Image 1 (cartoon, rainbow, N blue to C red):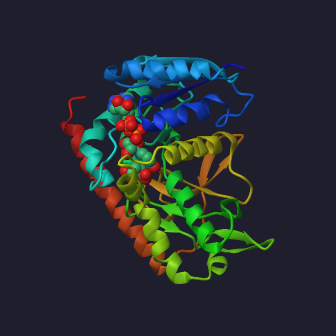
Image 2: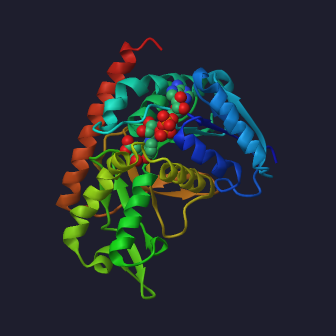
Length: 337
Ligand code: NAD
Ligand code: LMR
């Protein structure tokens, strides 16, 4: 079997250091699938990148059939099957993720063009670099005509995982006993973490999360704000943004895109809206999705009921994404890249 060619951008950074081992050791694509890793960073980080390559070689991983460090987009994007677009500036204390828009959007315009020019049309892309949804929107726009928009996604799996953990803690179960939380909208403090359709296995029975938790005020209050603000809290504590949990979530996201979701389960993934739930077409919006492992196609879960509380929360995050999109398009027009 020819190795999958997998690109990680920002591979000399914090998330990069945690993510490459999971891709290389078979956690993401399976122990029987050989992988060729391409690590991209800026030229100033070439030495660090080389150190990462040496460490990967020293891991002696049977699934890792090749690894290369590059500092140019042409070499990075050539013939890739999957792209983890991580490389971007992280926010610091006191910033919102959208404050990174002007600095980071140029990177994704340029990488969108590189995807169109050099990547396989079937390439699947996860954008991790913030503001992730809008960066994915820009990359998709500049790759249009070559790589279809539905191959672009942004990561809200970290928020999804945070939501699973919060429900588990409150319900007094382990995280493996919770499924089907939903993150709606933007990977930002306006996202709507929703436990209304989640299920918990407790005492051998599957019950809805509201019954298992027994505290509606929590699920409509602290649960939502804890997940919305978790990234900021990690930055306050670590003085660095989350990396271990972000790398794990990115690997969960691509693992499920490659192998498909479990029967009866959905995951949260920011994908181009097709108008479902009234979200404007084309916005990269986090929805509950199921994935068919054979076709590797995602589908937005349809027909979930939304009460007024949910509709109001979804409207707020939609408005923010529309504003970010407009600001990003303006920044792209002004950028010479
Ligand atoms: P970091 O600063 O440690 O690493 C970023 C790396 O990207 C650096 O090595 C930098 O040189 C590189 N880089 C910058 N411009 C590049 C370019 N044009 N091409 C290739 N590489 C480039 O940051 P980090 O902690 O690894 O975070 C990376 C990004 O991920 C940040 O934007 C952060 O906010 C975001 N993030 C997103 C999520 C999420 O849930 N979506 C979670 C955590 C972090
Ligand atoms: C996170 O959610 O931890 C990341 O997006 C980093 C951040 O800026 O919050």
